[in-house]
Length: 73
Image (cartoon, rainbow, N blue to C red; front, side):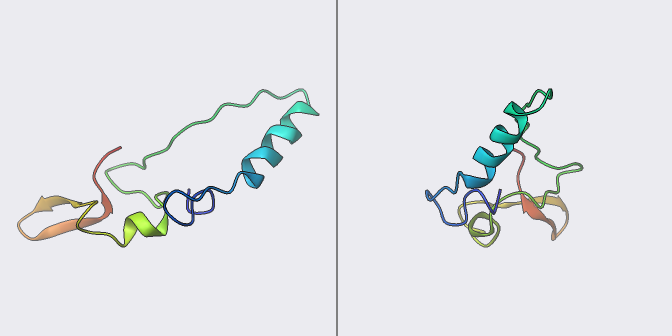
């Protein structure tokens, strides 16, 4: 997702458009799947989400232990 929305509210559709165009020229069907990660971790949020701990708090898993990812989608 970092490539799709490198800055908040600014989207780069070229990658998605390319995948759709490739799918149309083949016999494949495409599905868009939003992956939040497993076990509460994810590398998919854009960098601006990952660096803003106030707006996007991290999951706390124990006394003083937090995951590096924001909470679940």
